[in-house]
Length: 227
Ligand SMILES: *Cc1c(COP(=O)(O)O)cnc(C)c1O
Image (tube, rainbow, N blue to C red; front, side):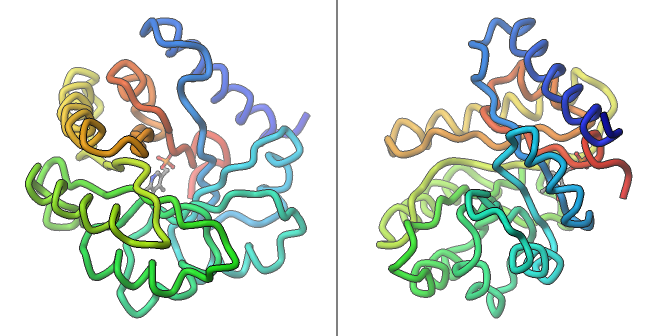
């Protein structure tokens, strides 16, 4: 078995173990394999192990892969910052977008989503530690008003919330940040029944995210190696 295959299976095992430890249902947490900067050959290896959801952060790198990829049944997720002049290729090539951070982006993605495709599955990015370097809505009011915008677009479906908390190696800090994201998610979910996805947790903090109720972890390094 290749190194990538071994690493992928070991991440799956970590997820299942963390679900058990946290008393969550088996399979409550979905794995998004973050293949940014990695070659299509690596996507292919993980595809062979039945992974179908892949996350990309850099638009050009992603488009090169999507264009050359042989597998029509991959769900490509855009998880990077979105410039408003780059919304069209995102609307045309992805199934999911996790990083909607302002109304203008939601309007453009909906306008530009081809009607021949299913609606774009959307998460609102929240900036939980109010970091200037990261995009995202940074108050509950902001999140709710953006949720209303996304929800009212014809070609978008509001699926949930995405967050990238500040980096910390302290599991208690990780958990308290994730708990705050979860409490915002719970409020949004009360308002919108289509909202079923809490996208949080990466290679270094997936256990904390699972303990605090994530439904989708986004894992790059621990599957594909350092970038
Ligand atoms: C790169 C990236 C990830 C994956 O991070 P790893 O630490 O490599 O697992 C997850 N989410 C976003 C938004 C990313 O940009």
